[in-house]
Image 1 (cartoon, helix red, strand yellow):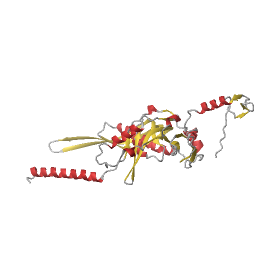
Image 2 (image 1 turned 180 degrees about the vertical axis):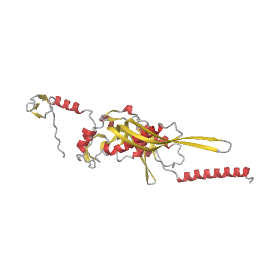
Image 3 (image 1 turned 135 degrees about the vertical axis):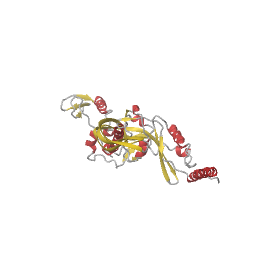
Length: 360
């Protein structure tokens, strides 16, 4: 059992309050007395909506105060079962009575998300999106998917870091203009070479990087874009009926991925500055982030794992737009038939050409 100590600060001066047998909370520093209910409401209002703060996180957790690898045990208030999680879950289902559990102690303080995009499509719509994704895939094995398997699709709020930053940099671009002309004797090619230097700065907003080691980064990147105009202030009520994962990759670990994405975009913009030339390529470039900041958000994703011939295939559905991504298996038999049909068709065409051209 874990003992919990609760303390309140004086609304007037911020000093600690102590309980007085008269039923009041008393400040030893300024001698003010307060009703317990009033102090509780003040404390709730003071902390409400603060959410994740990068600076606070570094101060509080850089010394290892929180061990994400440890498991945590919660007691289901519906059936009394002890639920063990891997320490990163923010909300989950009780495996015994299947009631939704909101694990408030995993969502409080400096790990509380700043924002959330609620699910905009339901489970049935997500299942239909996956079915539509399978349609028209001629090489997909016939028995790969079934309604029974598709019913296992699960809605999960995935932790994302949304980075804002300015990026300063410069690029040296090799550019060419090419002119062709001829006279009565020769054909000429004239190539003019240029070195173009571009300096500039760009601002980026809400560059997403998933903060979960369990999620495939390429899969999460492929789910974009999300419409960030639908971001709402985090409220635990949005988690009801869904799973939620808490981040296990912190912003410092995720920043290089965000930086790479920003630099790639900046290079393309700088390269576009030389679009007046016939050809252009970046010779060298140098970029640096200026005043990066980050917000912690939960984004809606449906996940589906299908096992086929001892291999697992994971699919993800954007819970806002319905976009489906994932790798599909290929039927060897259908592939052979397709290849055989192509080969037979190619052979027939070659025979026809030979008949008319070669006289065979």
